[in-house]
Amino acid sequence: MVEGGRALEVLAAVRDRHPIVMHGVSLSIGSTDALNRNYLRELRALARRFEPAWISDHLCWTGVGGHNLHDLLPLPYTEEVVRHVSARIRRVQDILERHILIENVSSYMSFRDSTLSEWEFLRAVAEEADCGILLDINNIFVSAFNHRFSAQEYIDAIPVERVVQYHLAGHSDHGTHLLDTHDHPIRDEVWSLYEHAVRRFGAVSTLIEWDDNIPEFRVLAEAAERARQIYVGIARDGADHHESSAQAHPESAPSAHHRA
Amino acid sequence: MNLPLKHIQSLLHRLITAPSGVAEGLAVERSLPSGGLESVIRGDDRLSPEERVGIYANMYFYRLLEILQEDFRATAAVLAETRFHNLITGYLIEYPPTEPSVIWAGRYLSDFLRDHPLRNEYPFVADLAALERATIDVFCAADAPALDAAAMSAIPAERWASLKMRTVPAAAILRAEWKVADVLRAVEEKRDWVVPTRSRLRILVWRHNSLVSYRELDDGEADALEMLRRGATFGKVCEVLARDVPEERAPQEINRRLAQWIGDGILTLVPPKRRK
Image 1 (cartoon, each protein chain N blue to C red):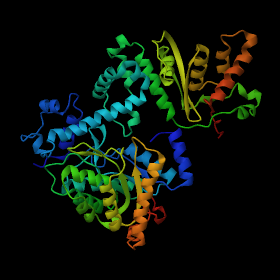
Image 2 (image 1 turned 120 degrees about the vertical axis):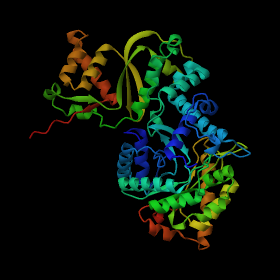
Image 3 (image 1 turned 90 degrees about the horizontal axis):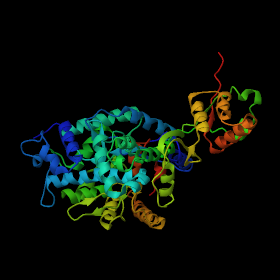
Image 4 (image 1 turned 90 degrees about the vertical axis):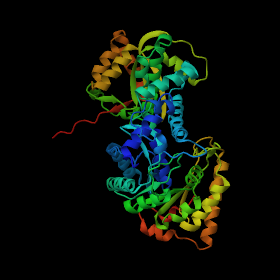
């Protein structure tokens, strides 16, 4: 967030033509530091100015002790942490005067203390905080490989009415682990998972994240078209569950925003 | 085990930011549970707990290094890869990021360089980093309506002397001891840079139509702009602009400066106070 200049100018120009959503990486909702009130005030001001369809951030922590690691670090999946995070999400939602979405992150470590699976944790937090879910399909795939769980089982456990947006992205394969790098084409296995998700959750908004090694626009457009074909095909089959979720979160999931 | 979340996060923070890597961080760690890192983080046949934390440690450093290399291209070019890498290692220990946006990560790099041993070999490098940082600050500074020629012409001449103008928020005046603008320009234009000459000077950095520019100021212009920033009337500013030129050339000099400032988009009018 900046005070002025080109970034805001471009955002205003885009907003004049299109609906937008706001996606953050710095909420640090799982941190044990106090919520950053200045950041939240600035975020609220930005949201009042640009009226995004929804605001999302990650289910993680990004720093502690007043220091920011600028990374999305996983949490121990316990009931105690569910209570900690969901209470903070509720406070954030009060300050922002709206429901937010929380996104599952890619992770490279897990905690001995965890007593819940990641999907149980995500579900519990979303329900206790009464917030939406931004389901990052690539992150599920990456974490499923890194921690040896079933990506499909994960998706099948997420409450349908909470899912408001998908993220798709590419990742890099380091042999021993996958890294969520947003710098490769989306892998076929991730596309299959996406199809599985769309069958379950319906054709909610999809965003393709590609922010390094950015290809020609044609390549990105083809990926967006592939996503569109998947959900158009499934919607045609009559599997549009999304109407019910739009009713659950009318302010955060306009039905007119279903596009990749 | 059930360690408090704060304890886990503080431990991971120390290990991820340990300057010589997770292994050395572990070696000096005093609040590790008796079972070691293995009792906090799961390992498996592919990666040990230490290696898993190491993934985050590498990402922490290299993400910030990459960002700072982009923010300080000329400083990085002058120091070359290894010295810049080592500089950032030390910088992140002294000034770890505290703000939500990475745009602020390099805010104190020029301060850090002022007392750094690299200054013996590259005495101008702190000024160079300050100039590069100023271009970022100006790029994202608050917007303000720039005074244009038509608006200035519409103001009756008898009001000019008492007129209060300011420089826009996206205009900064930097004090330097080296002519580092030449170095930055050379790097931006992909030319070979040369060691700058030493000269106490001020540099104007400003944004106009989304583009950031910079140029050295002579003393008269620098003093005049600094007076504007402090709230002086245009009449007082004119006195400074006329200071170093023969009296008969003063009006011409004032017009020239004013036209340049308006063209650069660095002036904004201070609205008159409402009368009660």
